[in-house]
Image 1 (cartoon, rainbow, N blue to C red):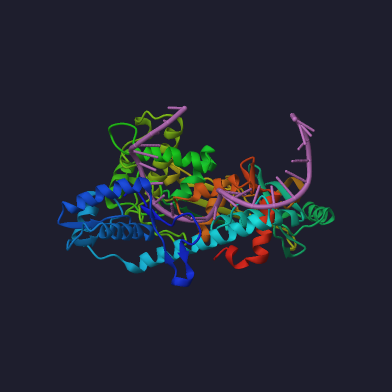
Image 2: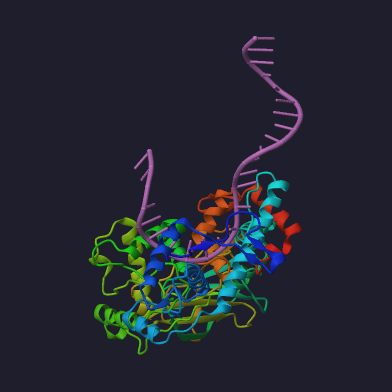
Length: 507
DNA sequence: CAGTGAGCGAGCTTCCGCTTGACTT
């Protein structure tokens, strides 16, 4: 059917709340041709099997098709069955065909409710805006909340008051190569990152460190593991392509579409790119394990495949994760153009890494104190003892609010060999002034992430939501960040004031 | 009598989610 075949006409009165939410349907002209072909085929067959996607919208498409075929009177007494599969592999299709069922009317009704609601919200609120706020063009269940997220962040930034704090660090050595430790205890009290508020306190801490001998109190070495991220969904692909390749959501989806369609006679290069699923077919898992053993060695293959579960709210998992259709097809073996090459490589690495052994690291924490225990310093370091999946791929990070990041996170440094009880000599002490920073404005990537977390929008619509906000003139981009225009702030304030329920994050 | 401008009325906009290939310039 190539997607939906019928929709509500774009005019008033397509949904009638007073008539138990009766809905008018209109067949799309392009879909009309396809429906004729389907009807012809149905006429010549003795049964009809509906095999659209196994999710809410997929069930709805089957329902629409069935309804149209019934009205065309081509079914007579033919058996009608519904089957679903999550991947188009021989085994998945055969299994599905062996277990047909009937249409799931609860899913269909969920669709009808979703469709009616979107229409009623959008086609009621938008005209109100035209009349009350000249220049405002539209409102909707999804776009208005997305806009609100952007506006709320801007207000948060405007309200933000920078907070002064100081860091105190000492360069030390204990008959060893030098290493750096930071103040964690001052006048007997634990010091968190933002606790030293002024220069006087920082100087007092400096004096305390300089005045008294320092002893290495304890050395703790702890092995830690890091596990790979699951293979891509639409949302994580858009985020990571933005972080690592600098693609916006639209560019990512265009390149992914081409990879999906294929560039030569070998067929599609990646699985379906509009998905919220993180699972991989057994065939794909086996292939990944083979490739890893081949290219990296058996030590990089975990004893069991990794099975991932979708975390996203409202995930429907109709399709598997985005991955190369043939994982043995290495990016270097393909001759692809710029964007396609880079995106395929990203997808390949992410998939391969997701089935590799965890990385192992040793994290060392050294506590240093004055004899009276009033002043304490800590040095941390970590070393990779086995790189595992890091040999291929490391997930990118979004910038975070300064002063909010956890303390050990960014520490990849290596510490020299040290002994407990040794005296640490002070080479230098640094006190530095810092200010906390406001939360960052949303980028396309971080906004898509937020929308997905809130269960707003679907994989097929993330990129278009961003475009809508810009087309309406509600936001503009500056250095890849969303900045609300006055227009957008006005719309949000208006909707919050008079239609608060409709722009709740969880409506 | 031609050009200008005020006043009036008609027609338009809009939601979300699914999916490619068929159009034209």
